[in-house]
Structures are given as C-alpha cells and as structure tokens.
Image (tube, rainbow, N blue to C red):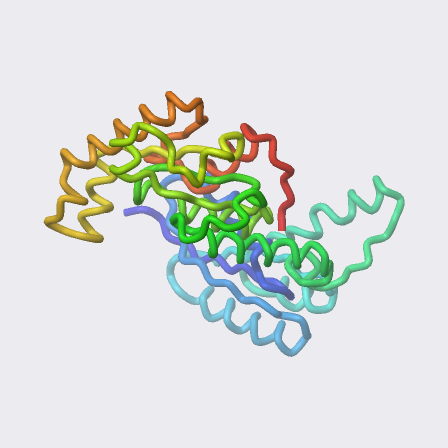
Length: 274
C-alpha cells in the first residue's frame, strides 16, 4: 500500500501560490499519496489558532505528521501555525530573506499581492482575454478575430477550449478556437473566416483512439464517435494543417500547461503570469 500523508496549504490570501509551489514539490515523491487541504485567508491570530487546531487534529491520526506549506506573510500569524505538530515548510520565508539581502531592500510584507486585483491594468487585460476566449469558443463568433493572439484549430474534442481558457486565465492571452469539420476537409481548404489569419493559427491534434473515447462519453453510438470516423477526421485535419503550413502539437499525452507553454514559445507570444 502506498504511504499517505495529509498536506495543508496555508495562506493569508487565496492559497494558490502555496498550492502551486507545494504541489510541484510533492510530485517528486513517487509511491506517496497525499490528502490535500487548503486553508486560505488565514490573516489574523484568531484564524491562525483555528488553523492550528485543524492541523493538530490531523496529527493525532495514524498516518504520520502532516505537512504544512505556508505562504503566510504576517510573522505573528506564521509563528502560531508553526507551533503545530507538523512538518512546516515556510515557502516565503525561504526566499524573502535572501532576496532582501541581495536587493538591499526590505520587502513590504503585504498580504495577498500575488493573486489580487491591485494592478488594475493587468487585471483588466486578463478579464478581457477571458471574455474574448469565451466569446470566440468553438467558432462561435468571427468578429474581431484580428485581435486574437492565437487561434487554435483542430477537430472537435482535441483540447482547444480548455487550452484557450487556460491561456487567457493564466497568461492574459487572447485565444480563440475554431473547429475543423468534415465540410472543411471536403473543400480541402481552411474555413473562410480563418484564411486572413494564418500567422495566428496553431493546431491541436490527438490520437484517434483517445478521440474516440472522449467522443463516446459525449455522444455514444454515434457517427461522431465512431472509431473509423475519428481516424479519418484526425488524418484529414493533420493533412490540412500540414499543407497549410500550420504548426501543431499532439495533445494526447500532454497537459494543458505543456500545450500552452509550447504555443507561447513557438508563436513567441509575450508571457505574463498572473
């Protein structure tokens, strides 16, 4: 049986930073399973004591000391949580001190700066990118396609929508997506709406077997999900993208993060992390 440990992500903000950093570290330990608990907005001593009690209750169980990943900024709050019977990993403390020394400047110890709307211009740009991607999902609108940073193309259910939304949410990239359908293959050319934006196009393809599995869940016993049809559509889409000189990536075994990073790199799009 794999070992199990409980992991707490404790933050005075949303907890997203603690989750991201902590999860990246935990993935390095194979053969371990983790029950993950996020405790956000621990921004007062009273809340810190509530958090401490929650961690202490977990420490009384038989699966070993809990692990606490903390991005707490306030020293008084942090010291309360540090007193828990747990392995305490201070993600901010490990880096703030060396950075202060290297920069010769004291940090302002402001709570919640990494995931907030304090930078109104950047926040506005990200919201606009999300709205743009939603409005241009699955070819829903042809308007303002020229404003897109990237237009994802590929057969239905190849991963275009989640990748578009991830690019918008995480990087503020205006990403539209447009399906390639059998009518495009019979015409042997790109949809008319896309022909003026070839430099913005990026293709997603997928293994036909995986496409069949995904489509079967959505529309079982249909021509849409038929294995032979899936193989044909994938082959035709790849042929069309190859002929049109469109860069593409196979999404079958890649995460959204890997796909998005590849797109940003190959299209040389400016990368802002929010």
